Image 1 (cartoon, rainbow, N blue to C red):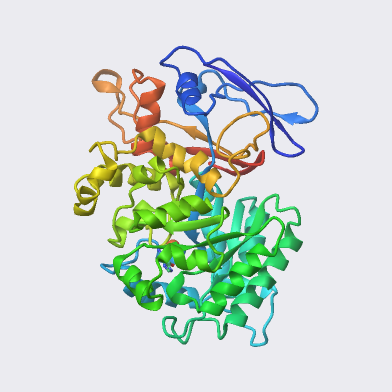
Image 2 (image 1 turned 180 degrees about the horizontal axis):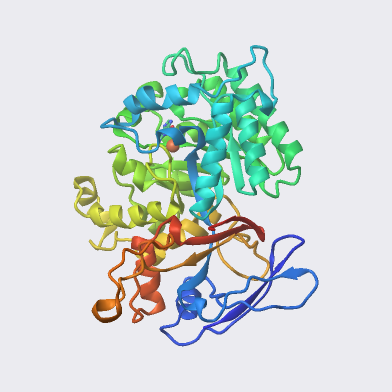
Length: 484
Ligand code: GUN
Ligand code: FE
């Protein structure tokens, strides 16, 4: 139940692995079953171009490396609103909470500029904070929605690059005056296009090879975008080789779906994106709660990807996405926090919520109606392993990096978190205890009693763990966060 991992200091990739799978009960066996690898108790290699992380054999019993989490859908500027949504649902939430907070990211300078230095200090602070916070929860890669503002969006790219978090950065496009408020929108479809181009250029200069930061074309969703904007953004994505990634929202809320039907009579929601070449193998579709089976078939045919955002879907009362159906139909699914529709920046929380939501799905009317398609009731439940898969390998597939991220295999990039399970100190028992109040370090919520198998330790971490269990985080082999 021990092993060694060698990570190249040159490119942050795993150069060699040596571990023993052990018996059925071992962590190695559990991880191997799920395509992950036990790299506890890593040892010194002595080789020149590699570095290794060392965990002592004793600590190793309750510590393990885990692939970094991938947040496939998060709104960085909405972070101040995490936890603030009252009883709103999507469309009134956008108006009451979301557009107001995002509109504060505009340049203080009145002459138009692309310089990240023209970002308001308050906006810089929020971006700094959301990167630090998501890293502390083990998120090594995030696909961010920013705002319409070019300097602030460039600043988000620069900050992620500096902090070493892998990120897709999307400048939000929203030019439809019949939906977007006067105070917060692109004046024209042309502005949606040219401002997006400015951000792409900035990011391509910042990180020419896209090792860490990549641009992503971001039409907010159908109701906020005019037809010319949708059309030019689809064309823009396709004009690059390889084509650029795209992210947007789809079928989150029933009123939103009805609105899209009104705007595009005779078309489906997925059909609208497809019409404008926005449904590609590099497209991330957030939510997908209320898709029809023909829309799912279209998404499958285009190989577009789904970001499942269960915490947000419950918080805003949007509904429950049928993840088992997605998986049965061969769709690619990852997890998103959707801050601040989602209240938590933690992908572990999103994974828990994915598990919980799947357990409620069998009780919903729409699911019962579809039951014949979904056959066996009970199959809709996601297991702990499946939810953790969505948080890692699933997310990697969503961002088209399944060969490089989400697991520990030779040649993959070492984006990882070191998880430590620990308990608050008990008083020491009736006999030897002093009865003093003990002040202990932040060891987290996971109490272990020495009897747990590795499988059970993982389950306890899954249900009760939090950022206190994240001892250290690496992106491409670089240490980007550690708990003091
Ligand atoms: N649909 C359009 N914009 C948004 C947003 O900011 N968050 C969520 N959850 N859905 C959206
Ligand atoms: Fe969202």
